[in-house]
Length: 358
Image (tube, rainbow, N blue to C red; front, side, top):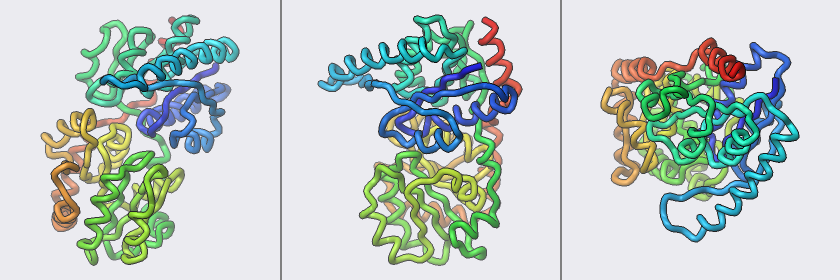
């Protein structure tokens, strides 16, 4: 069996597919793989670390507003479509699987043309444009949340939950303390802005650090695509602040050692935090991420910070509140875990087998 995954640009469409890859690989030990991703996204390093061959194709981004780049990207998508037809004809996969991302659109259109089954997974509360373009051609559409099933064809849509990588559960607090040179007597805050990082999250954390002396230690995943000039002075000034540009296998220990996680509102990261039952402060990017976190905030499962109206002082106060009330923090982590159960391996394999039989 040969499977082609596609997605990238950010790690949002990548991490659940890596988790699906683990589930499928355990059952189908002779399966072969390919991953179609972006040229400049952060996904290549993670994908190749799993031993999955990686290649890129031309693709563009459809913007929902008038832009000159929409004209240019129409041609890029067209080129990507013909490249995809050639690639899929040559590789002859049994199925193509995507969790979003514009790099996937020409691949899945080409697969439909060639009669290759496709599986599209919907993570975010709001259906992204890439998934809207792929869903009509898909053999099956799976969703992270039960309520999302109604957004797609009844004949295709199945609730699955979001798959979580096995390695997320493999970290230990002991190894995390050692790896990041932390003091075992102080609580730990882990901050991540996603695979590419977040300039605004980085700014808020740098502003907040000076107010957290003696309160916690900070592991800050700043992101490859964000300038480090903002981070360097803070790193030199505060010994309890530990910035890192990018994680691969270190991620599991950062999660394990963390007493509190600060993240953007991408569903992939939120699902990992939920699977571990960690208390979280979410700083959603304006747009679809705000919809992702609204349900969780209303259930008192997370604290939400508005990046446009908040500053470092506000964020520092929120962090202090969490560490001052361990019982409340623990309860929020458990509520988050209950709201977002991860996908079951047996369900994912059932869906795969049904698609392959069609």
